[in-house]
Image (tube, rainbow, N blue to C red; front, top):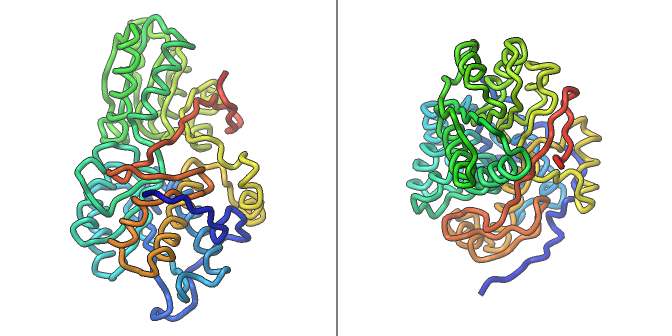
Amino acid sequence: MKKTFQKTLLSAAAAGLLLGSSFASAADTIKIALAGPVSGPVAQYGDMQFTGAQMAIKRINAKGGINGKMLESVVYDDACEPRQAVTVANRIVNDNISFVVGHLCSGSTQPAAAVYDEEGILMITAASTSPEITQLGYRSIFRTIGLDTMQGPVAGDYIATKIKPKKMAVLHDKQQYGEGIARAVHKTVTDQGINVVMFDGINAGDRDFSAIISRMVREDVDFVYYGGYHPELGLMLRQASEQGLKAQFMGPEGVGNPDITAIAGEASEGLLVTLPPAFEQDPRNADLVKAFHDNKEDPAGPFVMPAYTAVQLMAEGMIGTQSENPEKVADYLRSNTFTTPIGQVQFDEYGDLKAFNFVVFTWHADATRTEAP
């Protein structure tokens, strides 16, 4: 029978951001690996994850830690590269760390997850949305964000019912995350009768999109969905504007970063983005949001609150089981419901959230966003 825990230990009332690891001796600490991009083109998303996780660690330690021990964060850089993620995963194994928040990019998370599950390490990703990661039947892999199969239909339904384009292009970056979300959107819109005249991929890291933009101009495309990350879409937006493509663009949470405005400038105005709800606007998170602001940190990044939640869940699991055994903690997470900054959390048999909402936002050229009508 599932039980609902209304714990106050890890409430959203946090008071500061941990800027470094705990100073307690190793024997008195529980290490949590934070694995994600410190370097590379999407390091900004890694910053969001690290900020949220370290805030939770700070809060937990301020209340006395876990079962008499302090938490200690150890950051590992996988650069969102699959091979480097496997190297990082093996380092974490060799470092005898049993709990991991990460990884971030789905293409890195999936191979790393195989290592963790084999070694009995508990991993919670706050950012990876590919359904394939958890559907392999792992027992120690969880996530605190929704799936592409949740996000894609939200975007596709909005396109089909609100935008109603005459000729649509669906593009992606040929990577697990980007292509996966693009295919989910493609299926949703075609099932509702939208005319998709192009479904194509670009290469991650490309900088010149003149050929595919020229093709969209010839096809008279009036709406473009792009699955991938902000560096490529930012350049595409700018070049599309320069080449006279009169089409509206849309992308997933991987493009919802202020750097897309730094790249695209005015061309980013009106971009549609699916993102997690604005957890920083939830009144229940007011004290936590103030703590981030007091530390000159932005709580609005899509992975900040999910990463905070990942650490909170690990801590509640260790407290609930009076154990640092990741298998016991994993069983506890599957058997209970938790109150967190992202709302009520309950996991299914795969370690995925039973419910998670994505929201369509309009992006603006000043790098702000408003909920789309």
